[in-house]
Length: 254
Ligand SMILES: C[S@@+](CC[C@H](N)C(=O)[O-])C[C@H]1O[C@@H](n2cnc3c(N)ncnc32)[C@H](O)[C@@H]1O
Image (cartoon, rainbow, N blue to C red; front, side, top):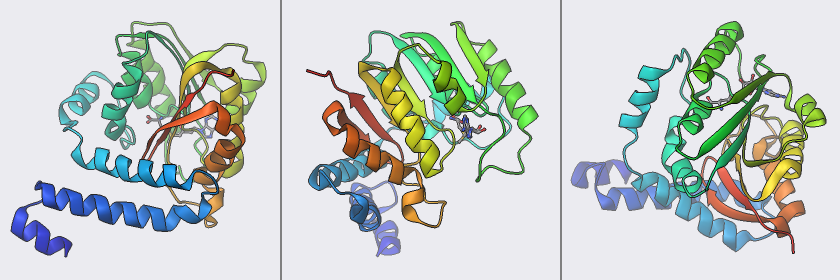
């Protein structure tokens, strides 16, 4: 079917895009719906909307090239496909005080660091990798990250430690937090809970790899922790967007 549609209408045709949205939504829902215990209908709509957004989003090539020319990256780009959606939510904020768990070479950090409304950045990374990140020279990753952050024109902190240790001593509040460190269930759960404690009301929480299934048991992946935390914090969280990342807004407590 897919091949026939591409042959007749072309990959960029609306009809092919709608077909992809339906197919991708079906595949996603089949896999993750059994894990969702509350707000199923809300999730279904957001998941379809997310696939629709991803299919029709504008080309990111120009910005990708801009960041690659200005900064030093030696490894894969896991971030640039998020640029449009991040801009949509982050540009609306008056100012950004940003915390990032998992910076790697600093792609997401320098993107946020160049936004007009950014005030300060805190990056936390062990620079030791995780279960899925091996055969990587983390001395080089650390060097690239430090040098990339150094090119920013705003104050930043780069903390070489686990997120767990960072949260133990942190007393700052942030209004945008990105969780992209360890992707194992227990760690994501800790990062989520700790982030909620230092995220301002009205702030944005972004969790990466909502649709990423590396660990054998599906619930050991980020999605297991994120859904469990959503159930606990439901009253304080609004779901803004779902695709490979899930984006929440922390609501005001009445
Ligand atoms: C997927 S990468 C981050 C990608 C990055 N956000 C980007 O835009 O390219 C995950 C990073 O999390 C770090 N990490 C893994 N476990 C961690 C932990 N417990 N605390 C802090 N960072 C951790 C790894 O060293 C790695 O650099």
